[in-house]
Every structure is written in structure tokens, then in C-alpha cells.
Length: 623
Image 1 (cartoon, rainbow, N blue to C red):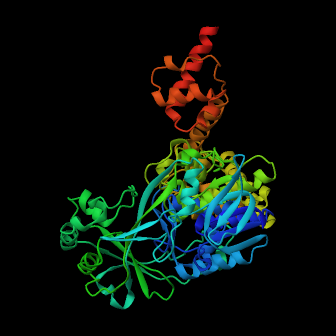
Image 2: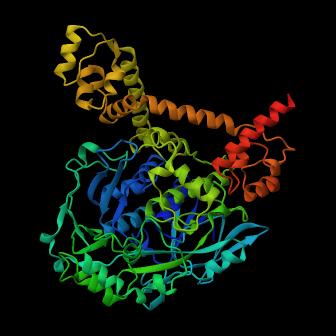
């Protein structure tokens, strides 16, 4: 059986990879161990969050499915950091885990050019250093030009609950052992990581009256730019907040000797920014309590997820620590928390397209690349699907720069720096985060999605209109000004703004912290007719004008620097400040420009700056 592209794994990365390749016209096969688990949310019942919301918005702007799925199945929507600057705000939604999975599976099964096989991929077939197909456990041979592996935690997955161990890719599901062996045989650098999940509690056994209620936003905003805001009225459910206490910590500490994390039972390195509760209690002994977020898993709210209580402690210890928490005194555990170890491919084995450097046509996306989180996985899956398709067409790949998208930051970090622990996206990882906001993801990336054919004309036209209105609004603010006349001073006071003593442009007045959308509409009748999205863009761009221009100038300088040629006879050994690793790689690959140097794994931005200075010095000496 022949296909253009085979995607192995039906998680969040696999879904986006398969949908993008099929929608781009390529016959695609999605191989999943269990078809009904396509789109399963293995851990928490939520999409988005700080920085992760940015990724979902970017996936949506490029034509991916995650944002639309979240809007259809969300049961609570919130903007995190809403009181802070627009660059660090993050959209987050609780989802109905069951409906999300069913929604995604139905999308997959109803997409043209996309086929599903419920089998386990065991071997990658390679001929002359290029993929040709896959062999499954049923000994079926599927042939393809490109293969995308999105195996999640299934590669030699090993679950830990106290002393109990079970080979599984997810609790109750088979692990993928032979596929991991196949990747090793191809010469890929394979490592070992660990992640974990929390217990789930029967809702009937929870006393919510002892907890703080956490409601969704009064006027919830959808994730997808393609969802109609005017008709978006999701049925929202509350979450709840409670806390661990000294008793909880005593129960945990007294059972450290049974914790796989501390007994040496677990080999893999866990996520630093999402540690288990036993790790938190051990590392932060001065903390008297830790937040727990009690989150509904479905619209029926029959089962709740204990976010913040990830653990691999034995069942009796889990029950003891859970019942020590206010509101959970009579808790009945439906599913115990567990840790899982799994193999991953060192992402420095990959190009920026997510194709492996050693094997032509083999791509990796998602947790197999060392990331953690649904959103990071989906972003990689989408890019792998797009680039595998473009490669078949013999067209230029789509590689997003760090100044274009969080997706660009994510992939660049992975393939140039690698990771020894599960990688999670943060706003702090993006140097140009003021430009890479959630609210302008469509302006930044929709043109790529439209050019590829993943965004329809109506969506693209909506984006273009928003962009033109934004540009027009900013021009109005720059072109108009107030003189300190009595009429103008009185007008400013009437809208709650301080008076002026000198001529001042509208832009500078709008840039004030006190200036709001309501005031902007009063200031300009023309701007008042624009869409809410455009008005929001105008307000943000006006307020942060100087900072935005500064970042754009930095980007221009960086682009100029990256085109600089490296002299062919440059003595890298003589350049002080470069590490031995950097020197060795520069000598081995002899990159002709700083851009090519930046593509080499392990060449850091700091090393590029040093190299740039020495190239300048080298040029002056020649003169």
C-alpha cells in the first residue's frame, strides 16, 4: 500500500501533521495503536496557558485544528495575566476531554486524502539513507515518500506507581518498543525522559464548599480567529482552588523511601517547571502549602483532575495525601497518578524543518523531540506536516524565524540547543515577545497559511481588513495632534485624561496608561467603525510604539548580521570567548555565512555575536 506521507501516532502532534499533509493534497496514512484514542488528552484537561496560548493562536493562524477544537469542546475560558501587558497574556481553556477526543477523531476520519490504520508501527524501512516505508506488528508494509514520527510517551514507555512498574505508552495501552529499537539502529541519538500525571477524583466525594471557586471570564474569547466572537457563548463550568498543608507534606515526606523519583527506580529526567508533588515538597521545604487546582474533566463534571498534585507515589500514600487536603477528606480516587519514562530523539538530530539530518524523509514531532505539553506537540506536528508536503512538491520549506513566531523560537531552541529535560515554552524564551503577541498571531502568520492553502479566502480577507484598519488607525493617530487650547484641554478632561501644556500627537496621548478602547472610539469616529480586533491592535501598537520600533530595529540588525560572510581561512582557534565545542563545530562544518553558522547545533547567539565582532576586525585588518 502506497502513500505520500505516513504519520505514526495519533496524539496532538500526529493530528496536526496528518491533517496538514492531507489538506495539502497528499495521500496520508495515520497509524495509531488505538483509533478511539486519537486526540486523547493524556494529562490535564486544558489547552493553552502562558506562552502555550500563543502557540495555539499561531497553530490556528497557519490553518491548524487545535484552536477550533478547543472552542468547540471548551468548558471554561480565561485570559491569564489579563492585568499585565499584552505580550505576556495567555489564553487558557478547560476542555471536555471526551468530546475533544471524539471531535478530533471525527475530523480525522472525515478529511479527504487521510486514512487511519489501527496498528503499531515497529520498523522504519530505509533504502540508500532515505525512508521508503513502515512495517507494523501485523507485518503490513506501508510505503511512503515521507514519514513523520509523533510517538509521544510510547517509545519504550514505562509507568511507575510506587514500587509497581508497567510497560505502557499511556496507562492501559501498549508501549512501542520495536520502533524505538528501529530508530536506534538508524543511528539516531536516543535519550530518556520522564513526565507524570495527577490522580482523578469522583466528583461525588468532593466537598467544594471548602474550596475557593474559580470562574471563567464573563465575556469569554475564543481561541480560533475563525470562530465568530459574536456567537461564541460556551457553557462554562467552575474550577476550584485548594491547598496542600503540613499534614500533606508529612505524609509525602514519610514515604520518600517509597517514591520512585528518589529510590533510583526512575532513570529519565523530569520536567523542571512542572515537578511532581514529592519533588516540590523535597525542593521547597520552606513552603507551607502548594496550590491545587480542581478541574472538571468533562461537561458532566463527574470526575475532577487534581492539577498540581502530579505524583508517582504508591496508591495508599496518594490516598493519604489527597484526603489530607481541605475538601478532599472523603475523596475516592478513580484513577491514580503515575510517572512515565519514555525514549526521545535528541532534537539536535533534526533540521529546522524537523527532518532528521541522517535519514532523508524522516521527520520527528512532539514529545519524541523532548518537549512537554499538548501545544508544543501540536505546533511541531503542524510544521512537520507542512514541510514534509513542501518537500514532496520540491518547494522551499517553511521555517519560521524567532522574530516571526513562538513556533520559530520553539523549534530553533530544540534543534540548535537540544534538551536534556522536557522542554516547555515560556514567554521569557522569546527575545521579541512584544512583537509575538497572541492578538496579532493572525497578522503575523495567516499569509503563510493562505499561501499554503490551509487558510481559506474569507479568513485571509478578514485578516487583511484587520491589518489595513490597524495601519489606517495608527496613521490617524500620527497625523493628528492636540494644541493646548481651552477646547482641547476641556475635551481631554471630559474623557478623563490629564491636560496638556504643549502640542501633542494623538498617538502620544493614546500611549498613556490611562487611555482605553472606549476613549479611542470617542477620539476618532473613523476608528470607532473598525472591528474590535483592529481597535485593540491600534491601542496596543500606539501604547508600545517606541518599544516595538526598538525590537524591529534589533531584528533588522540581526538579519543584516546573519547575511555576513565568514572568511574561508578564519582561524577559529584564535578567537577568545568561543567554547571548544563551538570551535570544533565551526572547523568541522566551515559555514560560509553567519546564518549557516546559526543553523549548526550548539552554536549559540552569544557565539554568533563574538564571531561577528571578529569578522569585523578581520575585515579592517585586510583594509
